[in-house]
Length: 330
Length: 265
Image 1 (spheres, rainbow over the protein chains, first blue to last red):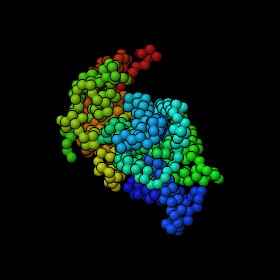
Image 2 (tube, each protein chain N blue to C red):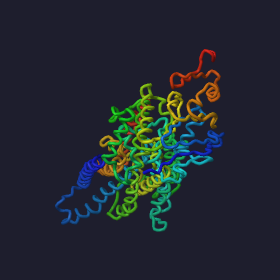
Image 3 (cartoon, helix red, strand yellow):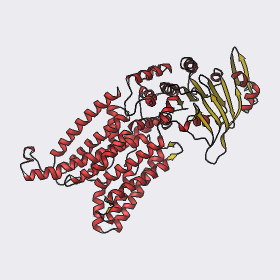
Image 4 (cartoon, chains in turn orange, brown):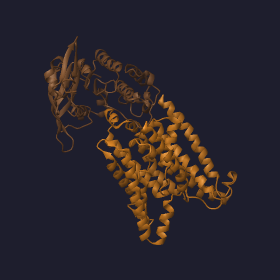
């Protein structure tokens, strides 16, 4: 029964993703003739060095933000939770800013410092938010979002301080990167990210059944045989890892993790075993399309993709907040 | 599977933070097919006790044994096949359809990484029927009233097919008809499946239908025995610290009330 529902949802969302990718590679300031991709060196370079990597980076980051948004909403039983609103992205951004100020390409034991730093930042943020919002066995929804706001503010202030004290070229780099962009050259960076992200996605998806029970009620999940504390710890760490990696590559792109799981729920229902993989696929499609829009909406130059998702996602957030209050008033 | 040979709690104690003991040296047991009601005034430690029995709170002292083995030593999923818990209330944020919520009770029985089978769906429907909530199946849980939610949560626990049911004030929001239905369902399951139950309740009429009553006062067992033994004026006045509590036998039921005129109203 549910198995068939999952298969149907995944089929539909995969088609949407393929369509989004087709649109993503075909729009841009330069038209590429599909017939000449392999014969014409200019088209070849444009397609394989710029257009395709950019679409794939959008896929990887969008999928990551979508799936972590779905997982965090279930874990905190709060439909307004997402990496951005909980301050996880902000924490990651602060970590990454410190790394950029210290030198973009530094490595610690083979791992780029910026990856490690933004993971640590995201992990600190998620732990802080959770510790503050958790009173005994319950996560207080108001406290959750407020502590998310506070963590975001602290992180933003930290970033500003770093921008102020660091040299101008690093400051400019931090500023440009913070807004969120999918600028990438060549396929190698995307491949490196996938080595970390794909396993993390898979482990997260393995937890969708437990998360489904936790989303209903924590005590219920515990008495149904879920080790809630262990599951929480693992999901937190995975979300921090995924957000850390995506933030260090594309900046703090907001609201994708908020809108996408809601869209999947509206289409296919509440079951996390559909919502999580569904958010992965739809998040990818959404960010590719948002980036296509960002690249074409201005007649010259392009908008940062973070600005597009913010402009689309902010109003959705407010609408959800309004709807929730109506529910609460009932 | 016939692992269940009884459930026993020995000398349990619990305190919240550095506060006083909320539960102090409480022992009780539930042999297969027995139904035990736990009564007591507000704050007497009833919910703390049942949450410990459900494994949601870790006792400061004492042990809880299921089939002779400490419940901590049980694999959580296997324990969930033996014991189901019906909380006082469940507030779900997301609008899960009722049938999906009941179906979640089947998860301890489902094979890892597999979805629920047709068999599980049938079990869920049966359980919802037994709890009297068939008409709610497709409604979002978030749209239900308090009483309807209690019916659905009971159905979820029944779908779990446990040998022991732990209930925390399951009838607090139920109307008269559904209270009676709850007693009928529990006694019927005791006959058909040899189900045991431990239930926290303020509803003395419901407790009358049980085999044993354990009365708590300030976290300690004030009295324990059959309804006939426990439900008398002297004991109840002591438990509720109110000299105007009155009892009267009508047929094989005991009515308990507070004489408001004598208490000065």
